[in-house]
Amino acid sequence: MVDPALSVNFSHCAAGWTHFGHDRESFPPRGGSDQRALRRTLVDLALRRPPREAVVAIDSALWAARLSTGDLAALLARQHGKPGVQRLRQVVELCDTRAESVLESVLRVLSCQAGLPRPVSQHWVYGDRRRIGRVDLAYPDQRIALEADGRAHDDERRFERDRQRQNALINLGWRVLRFTHHDLRFRAPQVVTEVRAALAAR
Image 1 (cartoon, helix red, strand yellow):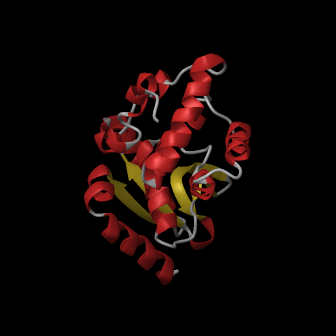
Image 2 (cartoon, rainbow, N blue to C red; image 1 turned 90 degrees about the vertical axis):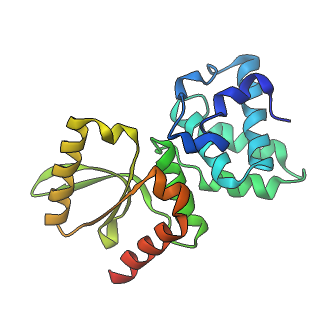
Image 3 (cartoon, one colour; image 1 turned 45 degrees about the vertical axis):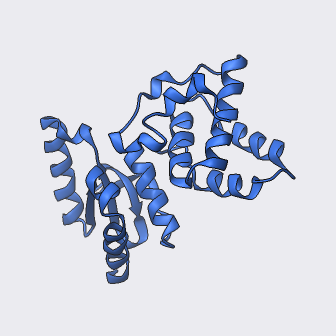
């Protein structure tokens, strides 16, 4: 059963990822009973909720340094032989310590569940002997960048930097696909189709 004292921390990162994001700083500090409760809650999410929601929650705990890859391995070890361990393993395999936003996690899991190759998270692109920038998700060999545009992209300066980086990527032969919260929530099949078409064209 999901710990009610912690469930509020997942109101945006599990079923509520549709609210664009969540307060990652609200995770309990490492160590102690709160940390154990966090682990139990994450296991329960993985076993009871759709994989996409569970991955978002675990990615967020990893990002906030409230959970480590060692913790994930320990969770799997403790569930060995118990019902649902295969489901938990599948969720853990979809997680990524480099994920920096809820929408990024959702886009990555959506791609993987659709049978597409797993994209690289937070990929740095270089060109002309300089660093061009970092993209949310990438297929480096195909030079395809996937960008998950959340509220942070509403900032004018951030918007300008993103467009400058996008122009530089295009000039280097990259194709950039941008997806919003609305796309991921209401147009998931079309998102998959667009990514698959971009990969096929390369």
